[in-house]
Length: 321
Image (cartoon, rainbow, N blue to C red; front, side, top):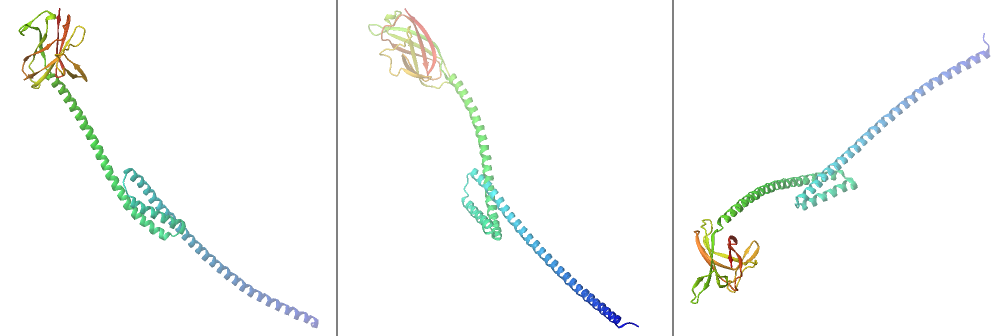
C-alpha cells in the first residue's frame, strides 16, 4: 500500500503535468494566433508596399512622360526656330520684306519659352507650338515660293546676260566688219590726184598773163591738178588744200592767202598756203588753183602737198633758179 505522502507527491505531479500541458496548449494556440496575426500583418505590409511601388512607378512614368513631352515640345520649338532662322538668312539674301509675319512668329516664340521655362504650363505651350507650326508653315511656304521666284529671276538674268554677251560679241564682230568696210570704203572713196603741173606767171603792162622762168618775175604760182574718176566717192562740192613748202621748210603764205587756210588732220590743225573748192561728179576732172606770192621767192627746191577731205592725195616738187 502506498503511503499518504507518496499520494501527495503523485497528486502534485499529476497537477503539475496538467498545468504544464494546459500551458503548452494555451501557448501553442496563442503562438498560432500570433503567427497568424504576424502573417496577416506581413501580407498587409506587402500589399501596401506593392501598392506604394505601383503608385511610385505610375508617378515615375507620369514624370517621365511629362519630361519626354517637355523635351519633345522644346525639340519642336528648336526645330521651328532653326528653320525660321535659316529662312531669315535666306530672306536677308533675297532682300524681301516679311516683317509682319516675323513679328508674329517672334511673339509666339517668347510666349512658348515663358510657358515652358517659367509657368511650366505644357498644355498651353503645346497649343502655342501648334499655332506657331501653322504660322511657320505658311511663312516657310511663302519664303520657298519667293526663293523659287528669285532663282527663276536669277536664271533668267543669267540667260539675259549670256544673250547680252552674245549680242555684244555679234555687235563687236559687226562693228569690226563695218569698220573694215568703212576703211575699205574710205580708202576706196579717197580721191586720187593723177597729175600735178605748175605754171609760173607774171602780169604784163596791160594785165595779161605771161609765163616766166625767172623766179624774181613770178607773181602767181598756178597748180593744175588732174583728179581721177571715182564711183565710190560722194559726188559733191569739195575743198582742195595746197601747201607750198620753201627750201628752208617753211609754209609759204602771203597777204593773198585766203582766210581759213587750215584744216584738221589727225587731231592736228594743218596750215596751208591756199585752198579752193570744186564740184566733183565722180568723173575725171581738171582744176586750177592760183596763189599770188608776197615776197620774192627764194632760190631752191620747193615741195607741194595736196590735201582733199583731210587726206594727203598728191605731192610733187619744183625748182626755182
